[in-house]
Length: 347
Length: 275
Figure: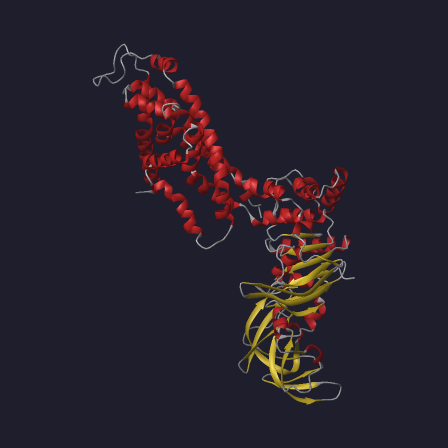
């Protein structure tokens, strides 16, 4: 049985449709990320799951039990807030045991759970400190700990890393994932940061305009984006439209584009004449090849170099670990048919 | 002119104004309260010729000062607590709910303050008479004071309610807190400075209020301001008035200092982490 079952969920605010007919199953122990741009409905969905919003239509269940109209204080979920929402007048220990006291957990149980979680999160020495004496990363850990001591069926994260600096973000996301796996927690994680989503998730739900655009594993989502929106939103993508011209043997299809003929091994609906193709910048193989372009911009990024090429009034991007290329050089390159993805129309 | 010079000039000006504004009246009040009736303080003398605590002892023993102190210091805290209770629901609505006309409603709450206090007092006491609330004079004054100073209370508490963070309320709820536990953990820490400030402001205003206390209270209830006005108005005994003014003002100065500390003290609900 799925840990969370969402059926035909819709939510509208004063005529604005924030979510429409949203259905999704989340498996026990799964780390699922809701990814999308601002206003795509991901936070609305999280608020509905945590109980702070009621859906306009549809239902939601946890462990098979319908909780659509259950208030947040009675739900078996725990939410980690973007702002951490630690009670500023309570010290770390009091913050950690607040929820347990509300649920009237016995003192022994409380002490045991708090010390276990504090040890796991490295908070033992911080227990007597007030939140404003902690760094952002430590506050984030207390917030996570406060949710963990509740031992919820589902743990919900609302962009928990957005207030941390880049380095700390990398560190804390590894920690969150480790703890989620250690406790086999079912987790729903909201973010607009695609690298966070790719690094942490078992599955990613890409949302746009309140609808699911694609649900897949991070690897699949990156390698096989279904639509232009997904391709563009996750990682860098070169998008090009073209006309199908021939189907060759070995299941390769040739598409005539402004770059020239591009071959793809992906299936193309026979009826479609015009298609949109996508290839990832790091998949281009520089050297010999049918395609060429002039470097108009170069950005050294450390482990790779970003090159912006121009050809036939078209701009595309290539990433290479060779840092000798300079602006003005003309380079030729090829793309393997397997790396050229055919996109469906958006919507 | 350099900034440093301008700064020191401004400081000198502020200190001078403060001296003229505060120190001179206080010094005069202290000196007048010490004038001995044996020899009057006439205009040709810089200081009173003979100084003693006669006026203080006399006022304490022979006027209704003791009674006035008791009634003033029992009226004021009662009015402060009642005012706080009455202001809470309105402040909660103004501070926590978004509705059309909220800003206008906030402004309307402050409007009674622009009417001269004596006018409000006369009409408000007429209302109390009509309602038949004038028979229990103490209660009537408490009620009137708490209503009259509601604008201050509502304004201060509205700001406090606005400072309560929604994520704290939500976090408490998410962790299973009952409405009372939510109030204690999310609302109360943010409201505390506002509650103290409201209590003190209404307390000070009530201690100093004359018109209502006079119209409704007299002749049964004497407060310090009504005693002061009678010392000044009927008998015009300036040394006695000086004694009463000091009795009225000195506790208020200390209370204002406490208030200032409360308002300045960091509101824990607003503090953020080191980031």
